[in-house]
Image 1 (cartoon, rainbow, N blue to C red):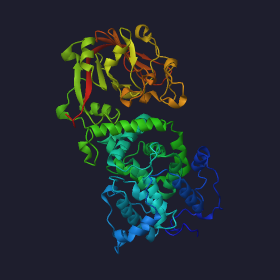
Image 2 (image 1 turned 30 degrees about the vertical axis):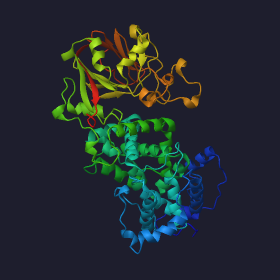
Image 3 (image 1 turned 120 degrees about the horizontal axis):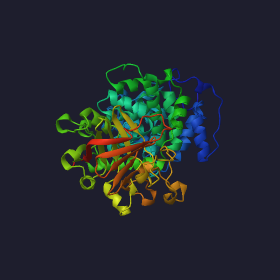
Image 4 (image 1 turned 180 degrees about the vertical axis):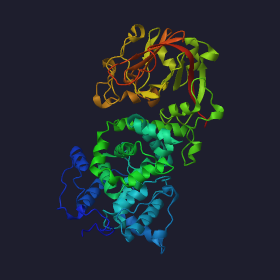
Length: 555
């Protein structure tokens, strides 16, 4: 056996990693490393993988004073003493996490707890890091001794490159990553998200498990392949793989009865037994086939979620029911939707606003059918939710990301604004959510013609006059909003308002038009899509409501 076998139980290890011929890794270019990592170049040779890990981790930029192997040798006896390493208590920041053993032998299993305690001693600023036991257990398979593993983990934790996020070390970072994952599921795994909403009382409680799927439930051969790529490409890889896991779970389990009373438990069991249905290669293939936002865009979304949590004073772990919204029957009343329907809508909105409760701002039953009153009651609120019930008992609506006061920037002209977080939906006769499409043609306001050049989030571009010249500076319209503090030139058009009408660009060819008297409306629908129109092409409004988002934490 090689020098990296001290903590490995080879009876549990994948036999193929023992028999491959030794290779060398000489490349240093990022793109080549990225390709080799994704292909599993060093996955079939235990010694080579250990050397690659050492090389990649040693190149992580770290704080000036980062604990190394010598520090571990100095402190381990003082901290652990003569206690049995297998019974050592874990620090609070690992949150009683599952401590995976993977293919470790008895010495390795005990070493995990010793290293965790020594890291707690050297990193007093860590307050929440549930992924740490898994990372330590994995790296022990590729370490000569405990001290070397300690040093490698410390370098990962001490990374000081602001553009290179690795492991969450605070509850704020962890919780915002769960919210960001929820946003990504809502965008890229809508079928799976629909299932989660149907079978779970708290969808974000399910998504809060996303790191556990990777750093806890995923078998050794799978998490090692993920870690190969993670060390090269960073945090975004974790989102990709978790999304792929959810997609496979939905595909394999769709239509089957739940195996337990909890969807969380079902997903965990699926991930533990993933070898029955998906190979590591297929999992990564699926993960990298997802046309995900750029690293810069995900970082912006993460920052927005962190800001929302900070504004509500949520920076330490607390009971989730105090953090996330349930639309309560006793304090919610709408003439258009039921509590259940409002909860469904709430599951579609960005996670940072799901921390709030619905607040009725305007209803035609109380405030009359006046567009000016619609604006006066809606302005100053961002985002808002529009609900419409037609005289034919159709129910549709829109989530609107931007304050209606933005319409004034265009003077008396029809003004376009908003972000790609906007979407339209239908609740009656059937539930359907439509992804957005950019409104590019102001003449829609008068002609009622159908929107053209429909685009998906991954392929949409801004109108020619507003595209930044440097492609690296371009951001998805999904994130081009004032609350991300981005320049106005990156803004796109999803909402339009004037004194004469309102236009909301939905997705899949859907667009909604409301006249100034708020009595009549019409829709346009692109027939090239195989979905049903939002509602009747021309309709009369029975009731219209506008809802805002009330921050219950800060009154």
